[in-house]
Image (cartoon, rainbow, N blue to C red; front, top):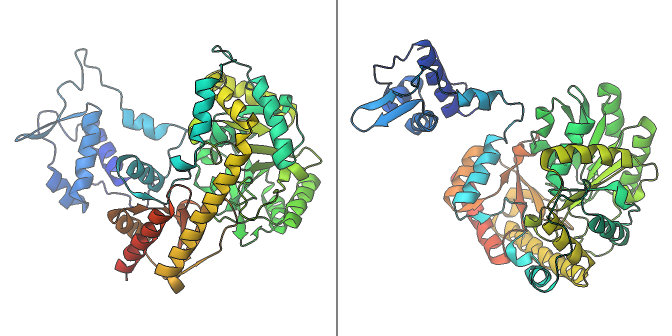
Amino acid sequence: MDWKPDRKSKTPIYKQLAMYIENGIADGTFPPDKPLPSERGLAKQFDINRSTVVAAYDELESNGIVERNRGSGTMVSKDIWGMAKRRIPSWNRYIEAGSFLPNLPVTQRIHKELAETKLINLASGELSQDLFPLASLREITSNRSFIGTLGYDHPQGNEILRKTLTDHVKKFRDIETSPSSILITSGAQQALHLVVQCLLKPGDSVAIEDPSYHYSLPIFKSAGVKTYYLKTGKDGINPDDIIALYKKHRIKMIFLNPIFQNPTGTLLPEDRRRKILELSSEYGIPLVEDDPYSLTPFTGGKMKTLKSLDRNGIVLYISSLTKIVASGLRIGWIIGPRSVIERLSDAKQQVDFGHGSYSQWIANDFIESAGFESHLKFLTRHLEQRRNSIVSSLNHFLKDQVEFSTPQGGIHLWCRIKKEHNENQLLEESIKRGVIYVPGTTMGSEKGFVRFTFGRENEERIHEGIKRFAEALKTLE
């Protein structure tokens, strides 16, 4: 056997092994009349964990390629050729060949752990249930008549909701728009996908912040788009870096999260926001503003979004109710030039025939209600309390071992661990102790950082989570 695991590959080793065995079955290396190598034998031969071999055989068994019988080992499936001697599809090859790339393995691991294990959750960007306006939403669904249609709605989204959002963004975000310039999406994530898929082509270059949430998304690579990085410091990106990137790479679009940025929590100063708009207009580069958190400033006041400062129609504005109302509503929106909105609307209709009318009705009634503003005050107050808890806990348990800037809004805190450490080992040790977070390299190019999110857990559990993280870090000494 001349196969060796590629430990630098992004493909997990168990998947590499499963593909090797499957290919070996196809080319006769592993004949159907003899047992396949034992788990222990393969583990020893390739210097890998036995659990990795077990996972590979599990994968092959789930695809109908092998059969596992206690006492007789693992055999090639008797039905692999079928009655007509036709092979079953090699699903692994299809999975690997697809152009829509999977999440990073670490991201997949985090999602899996959160779904299957009760951990102190400092990783998820979702709000906790007690921060949802459940009473108000129940009142809407229980006591108000549904006035929408249960058939397909307008391709851009329900017109009543789009009119309500027009008033909403004017009142809360100083954005002037019209219903015809709004597209309702299934959260901000779908909005980003539509922009990348419809407005860019393979080979195009775009700029994203480093670190940023966009850094973790495979949507750019799936679309064949090249990403270049704008370094994010304590005051966000430096606008002058845009000039250098444009001259070197002719970037076609810039993706920014300027207000309480994910993951750093930074607020891009207004003078930098205005400078970015000037440069964007000068070079003709569209800006995509991702704005989940501008309604959660802990110091009060109204945040000036890039879109609110835009006088030349160069900003595509994306926001949602996910981080301020309820993630399960799946209500997001894009605001932009009508021609762009119509193009994105056409693509969305091809994917899902438009957004669900029931959730649009609930969202519309809540945004219009008197309870919306009081909910924002409640939400911001509790997020600030949780922010204070995580800052206090970091100072108490880790003291001079970490560095961070205290966010003034949003739900994220970006923390640098001063001493060198193995990122994977630290995550595993933390999970063993019942706490999970996001390792920094999934969201940025520099090592040594972690992202803690404080919107999911209450103050007591945040305190306990940081305590357990500190204990995990200590084991690496």
